[in-house]
Each structure stands twice: as C-alpha cells, then as structure tokens.
Image (cartoon, rainbow, N blue to C red; front, side, top):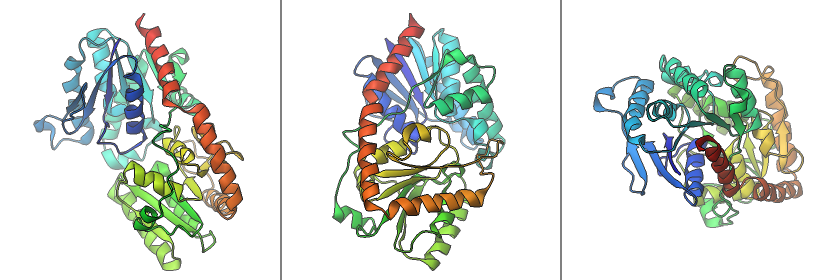
Length: 394
C-alpha cells in the first residue's frame, strides 16, 4: 500500500501538536507501508518527503490564499497513491482534490476545528472564512475522519451535522516513550533560568487564545509566593495576544519573583529536562482536542493539572495522574468560561493544592508514566490507522 500524508508541519519545521503527531505517525507507519510525505516550507533531505512553497505570485496574498495555492501545487504529484491522508485545514484541500482527481480515498485527521477557533479571524481576517470553507468541504467529502479524542468526535458531529457519524472514528494521539522520559540534569535546568529547589509549575504551549495562558497568569497571583512558574511559550498567533501576555507577565514580575519565561523553541532534550524539573505541568486550555503536551509531561513522570474540556479528560485521569479543573463554557465556539473568575479561582486552588504536596506530585507523576505506557504508544495507534486504511482500500 502506498499512502501520501499531507501536512503543513513536518520536521524540522514543527510548531504545534499536529506536527508532532504527523512526524511520529509517519515513522510508525513506515515500518509497515510506503509513505510519501508532502509538507510546506524549506526543502527536506528525508527520503520520501517533498516540501512545497506558495508560488511567488502569491507572496503578498492573504495567508489562507497562499495556503490554498500551496495545496494546488501538490495535487498532481499524489498520482499513484492508494490513499491520501491530510492533517489540519492547511492540507485538507490538497487531500480533498487529490481524492477526487485520482479516485482514491481521502482520510482527514481532525486536530482542531475552525468553527471552534473563531479567534483565528484576528490572525487571518477574511482568510478565516476561506479556511472554514476548506475544512467543511474536506470533512463532508472525506472517506473517513479520524478524531484524536472522543471529545473531538462529538465536536465534529456538532460542527458538521452533514457528516455521516459512521465515517468518524476515534484514534488517540500517542507519545514516543523512548524519547519522552524523565531527565534529571541540574546544569541544563539552571542554564534555562529555572531554580530546581523551588516548587515549580511548568506551562508549555503556543501563545494563542485556545491555550488559556491569560487565565493561568491571573491564577498565578493566588499561588503561594514560593512557587516558581515557568512559561515555555512562543509562536504568538497575533501581536495583540503577545502584547496581552507580555503585559500580564511584566505585571506579575513586579509583584513576585520566580516567573520564568522561555520564548524560544527548546529542543526535545531541553524540554524533557524542563518538564522533569517540574512538580506540576499545567494545561489551562479552553480548547484542546487532546493535548499531546499532556502526554509529554506524563511520560516525563510529571503530575498534570488540566482543564476538564475537549480531550484532556481522556488523557488525564482525575485523582490518579493529576487533577481536572471544571469549566462551564460559553457555547459560541470561543471556549470562553461562563464565569471567568471562578475558573481562575478553581485553577489557582487546584494548582496550589497539588504543587505544595510533593508526595502527591510524585504519586501522580508515576501513575502518569504508567498510563502513557499502557494507552498511548505510537505502535498501537499506527496499527489502528493501518486497519482503517485497509478497510478503505479493499
């Protein structure tokens, strides 16, 4: 079987969970079938991988139109594949058109949904309507849709009621347990500006509305003053959200010490080391289909405190591998808490309760590693994906 995997992100150009997912899934699939990767960006040297850039005449076009042009450049090259598998709206149009042109099944993996990210209109302007159209068209025409969590599956069927529920299957994200593991390296920890002797909470994520960073920064004001908060946060969606977070961090630093902001992308070893130095990993997202970063923390043996939304409750076992913070959300697609201050208060209370109890942190962290090993290996996820491919290509 020959499969073409289409993705905006692919190593070394990865900035989010979807890119991690594609990288690890391709690696696991290539042990069984032929996989050609078509991605965006600079030329790649990896065999079976081709990168594409938007044609020069689209250099000044709206970002969504440039994406569409890049997709069109891929479609002819997919000839000869038995199946095409696209990831995120950035690649969905290439998969959709290739499926029609070459008469092959098109599989979509849903990492997020445009109707549930309306703040992207800040980033794309009218291009958000284009990205939403691309996604809807691809989902309604797909041979199958993979949801990375049961929560995501429910969101797909609610957002796109024309989609046949029988086409939507849940296959969770996974984690490379050989790479993501506990690393105790005090020299690297201190070089990153982290004090290993303080109770520590770590956040890792892009600076985007869905990650809930402003709520976390508000909650930090209520934490015991000895608690250190490490923000590994970059790749802002817009100048506005960056300015909001920068102002909040600067204000916090006038009130307390121990606020560490690392705004560069850490390599995997550095990130594993930073996670391993934490007592608690926090995921305050208001929208999170699954959250690979929670699995990364669990694989490093770190307790996780996360919002009880999206796919997070399918990863974090409440009271076993960490804690879930309840949230009631406005049903307008933004994920905004109905009672923002209550969410902030509950987040602060839960974080304080866990981070100030070292034995509880150790217990949650050890259980998290076991849960990752038992439920989220890429080998098992590749097997489920291959079974779906086989059903569609008989």
